[in-house]
Length: 378
Ligand SMILES: [Zn+2]
Image (cartoon, rainbow, N blue to C red; front, side, top):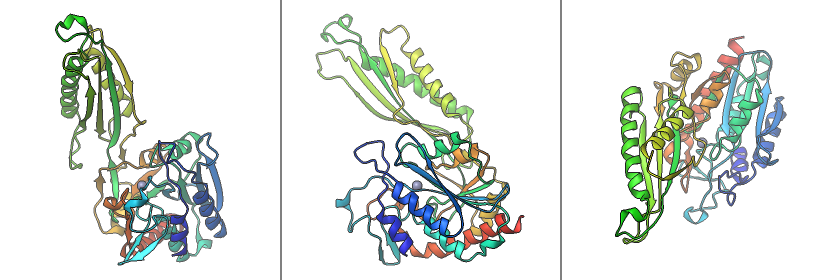
């Protein structure tokens, strides 16, 4: 309980808006101290030029293989007025732990500590890593820094994001793109007085809808509830007066790719398509990628950790509709399953809570997983 409340009490909001963005140093150092007390070697890894954004990597045991237990230290921004209590003060009520990050996903770390209490750590003959990243909720800077540091970690990884104790081996990727068209204004009475950006956007939308059709015909994965990649036309702005030719028009789309699709290829295809659509129209186009986007995750359903997670959770592996750091971990040689005690419908909400009856089963899952990969396998 104390570890839960101390983590919740340490603010660590990450946001692309500098107004809300906070350091995660307090959380990272707290975790480093706790794991160091258990004999782990610990390291704080800078993730950017900002000295107050850190990954924490703790390791116990030596050799190759082994297990990585991974979670993020940051939370999303919050609006205190919407909370019934101080979001940074853990409240136990109605068999729930309320607090910012209770479900997504600070509680994962005290649960790891509780699992370690049940294990004779002297017996470890494969390494056990605890990875606590920064900025998962905003830029993925922590995961990216880990990838570029080429720091070798274990072979098998579990991310404790909120999945309601169900193992997840796949999720889609995300790409957000804003397309800005600039023409020129003029009196509405004669089209030749200007170049209409809104009409240009009409062509762009038609062309992107055609691209969507083509992509959906090429890519299918029946394991997802929506088995094809999607492209949502999210917002459009443009024009002002009825008697003026529309000079500016801006469209934002959100694409969810299947894990087999490459983020950069998809972005390039969208941009190529837009350029072709407005070719010869005297319109200027600018692209803004809003955020860097992320690839989907796909871990082989036969991977040892996926199979073990299914067995321990008593649930078949499935897919989720949110993104995780899984693709980054997989890209550096891990096989990753996502399995955590929280519920995603609680994440990013005021009055976020974790159901207390999820804690003991998660402790047991981790205890068995550590035993399997770090003691029995050696
Ligand atoms: Zn999360």
